[in-house]
Length: 329
Image (tube, rainbow, N blue to C red; front, side, top):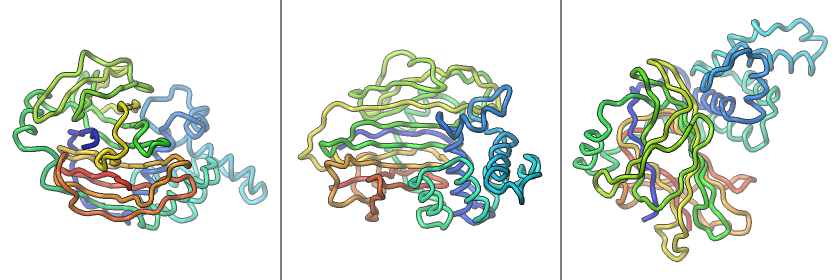
């Protein structure tokens, strides 16, 4: 079986009041604006004291207004940022997102063709799954053991992005994880990372200071380590963090080594998964699938089509007690 990462977070599930596709597209925009790079730099230059994991809506409105003034100097000569603040709020907090607003974000921030295409697919609902719920990601005994070790939950995940890169061998080369978390207790200074193997390399990035201690067994073949945050979060504070995972060489002849599974023990929201293949070793078929537990058989699958960057993408608005991901042949 291929290595899997396990998420044990809790976030209340509720049916959205607005169209699922529009909400998904807005969440995707928010994730792009939080990631380190040109998009985040564009709006952060308008903020005196930016906060990790928080998108300043007025600063985003500054970018949109600047684009309108530059592209439509006559019609938008007097466009002020505060006039666009409601547009930004609707896009980033789950309210209806109009076609015109999405196009404005794409143009103002200069999204790539791949990112723009993904945003439109989400907006239309083509790749949105509202709620994905299963019977369980791990055996009940292991779930209880994990709960005993971790104690009361101290944070929840507001958004999670997995970017899986498959190398020229047809096997996973690396995994880039980006999370936005919210403290549900005071003095949150670390988060747990669970995996079903100790044979992995974990490198921390933005929002992470260091790894805390050695990886240790928990139960059911699962192992736990902790990542220390760059700052301690107070109750209700949010933070963004990222880390990279790589595994040792696998067996290209073993079908189970050509898959990536994300196991969710509790509940999470805003899960975004993307897998990218090396152009010199493209798969014959790629499936999006759910499994019967972390080491179980495939329950459901759907063939997916790769885009121009040899990647496939899925966005889940809510996930509960299930195992989902990609596999390829």
